[in-house]
Image 1 (cartoon, one colour):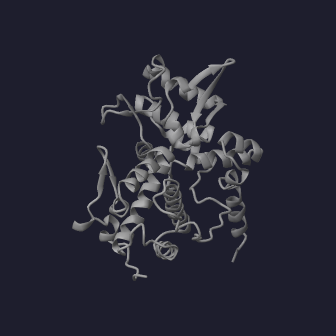
Image 2 (cartoon, rainbow, N blue to C red):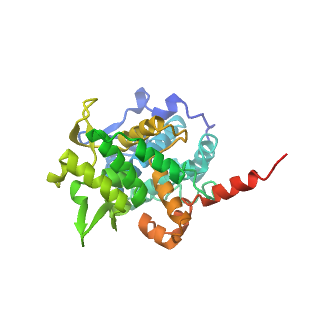
Image 3 (cartoon, rainbow, N blue to C red):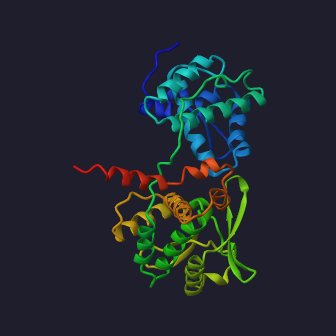
Length: 335
């Protein structure tokens, strides 16, 4: 087996003069490692990302992982015919020196799924990644930063809602907190996904895996949403994005949908203005909402249903009530 090389700049792209990629269609570039296997391999690669993986976030993550693996194989002078299980195992071990166990497991899953598909498409006979085991990783508590209830209230109250952008930002943050929504589901909503049913406002979220998740709006969320849609005039166009971008510093909203990056930058900006030192992410509000709900006597199984989780174990990762208990115990160390 060839000696392992560090994943430097050359390994990241893997495109030397002799390793030019094959282009399939107008825009899709197939890595040289795959392209060298012929047109059947090239089209199978394209089909894997277009037909087999429907979630755009998973597709993007797996594309990064697969291209990094293909670049490493180029550096090692490996081909689809010569690649073996011990090569994949060596690559996984190398990744373990750079990345956390969850990242390594994701990279391995991407490679394993790709080769499963290549076997189905009769490009290779066996999957060299099938027998490779990833690093052990046991998680009992999530790492997502969480706000206390009073901090969340401080953040919402600090937003200047005299402008359309302020109304939008308050409504979006409130939606993330009161519905436990993932940010991709929130920014993917249209105006029609906030609706009235049985004299009560509801929200319709399109979650991972194509699941449609509906739940009634908290009375404060209802207040924020009604104010936002009414004052901005967005309520008139049901097909418009519920959370559009802003046109520069004009304070006016556009007809373009916010991205996850837009939402993250907004959250950082609002948290800084509110004097909140916690390094927040978009997922922080999902964790905050679940933790506050459970602190106030909510049931884990109901939180699981509201968060649209398949397993209560996943919901439990967002439960940070034990953080407060630990701090109280630490403070008993009095000298």
